[in-house]
Each structure stands twice: as structure tokens, then as C-alpha cells.
Image (cartoon, rainbow, N blue to C red; front, side, top):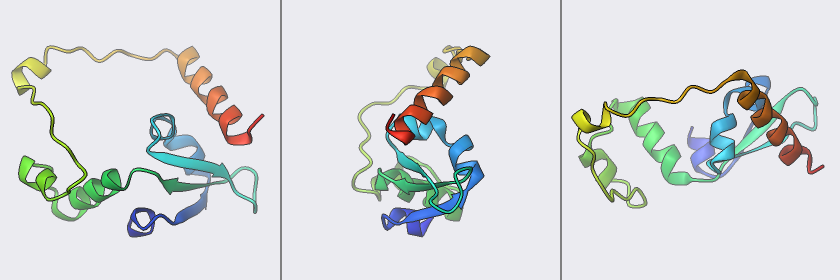
Length: 112
């Protein structure tokens, strides 16, 4: 995690290309195909504050408001009470959407 926070590339690993698609689409990480093996991938963290928060959760198990305040780039702009937040339903993704996302990422990674 610290290598990622420091802006270094990590990998290669097959899971990087498969397990972090949402983070890649949201611009949190950058993924590229490994030069050693085209079935493996490397990744680089683009949003340092996300990595710092993840490391804090891993080390302390704490993502309270106080923990967020200790990370200068993590801005807290609004608050939704848990009761109100529970009313939102999570939309399920069908398999076609997942396939489309995978195809989009393949195009972005390859540059073709």
C-alpha cells in the first residue's frame, strides 16, 4: 500500500486486471498490461488520498470523521444520516453491463 501511495507501480498480477475495474473507471488507479506477461497487469494509484484512507482503515480499522480530518485532501462536504442512506436501493448490474465495462477497459488499456 505504501508503494502505491508513494506513486510507484505495483504488480504484475492477474487480479489487478480483473478485480479493480471500478477503481480504474473512476480514475483512482491506472492499469497497464505487464511487459513480462500479457495476461498480467500492473497498477499505479492516481488518487493519493484514497490510498492514505485505505491504509488508515487497514492499520486502525477507523474511518470516522476524525480520521478523515487527519487527511488534508479528503474533503467532507456533506453528511447523509444512516437512516436516510438506508432508503437508497443498490442497483444491480446485469452481466451485459459487466461485459461492456470489461470491453471498455480493454480498449483503454491497449489504446486501440
